Length: 129
Image (cartoon, rainbow, N blue to C red):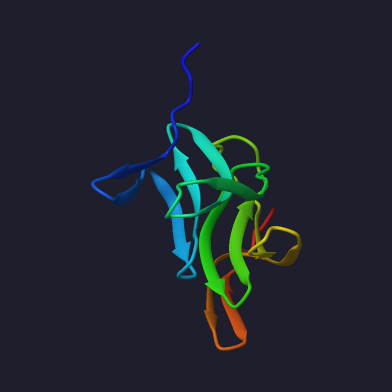
């Protein structure tokens, strides 16, 4: 069985993240969610000086996307549907502390944008007959 390779590499002192779904930084750490090759990943906190990383939010379903950062929190969308390419999604917006100790579900929706103290996002209404 082939060993999974790390999605983070350092080339000439520069950091490259292969197939990131979303990347944000607070100036000290890099936070990212890896997507690619049919894989979905937790939210990872990376120290760019040492290249040491840790998971701060475990994924379920299709993983995290749409990362944003404000203050001591990361805002992200977690699609709780298992299985890529199903044509169905169940996205939730979460607020996760940068240390990973707290995770709060804020709303059903996707593509959040933070402006001041407000979060704007898309919400899809499903009609059934």
